[in-house]
Length: 111
Image (cartoon, rainbow, N blue to C red; front, side, top):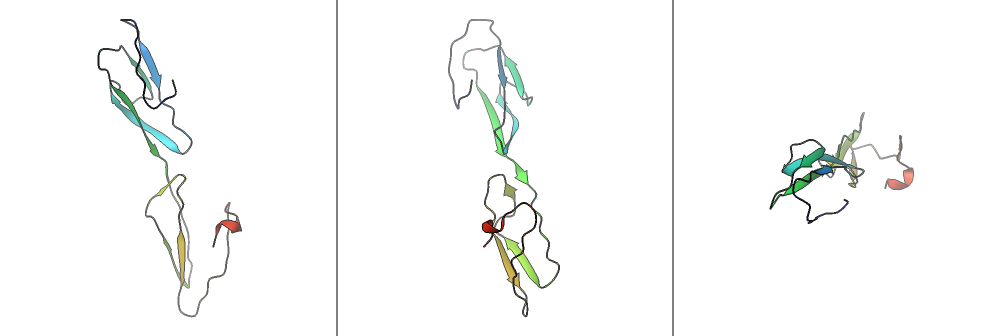
């Protein structure tokens, strides 16, 4: 079943098995309701059974280095998958910013 919310009828004694699978950029963090925190959940349904899978965006480490001549500020303290992060380059007096990109980021993504 791949849905946000479901309601269905099953025969008495039928076991239901659920497996939580996170989308790219997210992590499964646990169940709320009839299961423990394992990604696989098997329950024997009863009236009013509620089960919710909880997910959160992956938190990423984003490192940068300034050796001399100024500081770098970013617009967020914590970085999450898919989030745009803006860096502000503030040169010290007598210095200027020279565009330099290393790693996997193409120059076109930097302004």
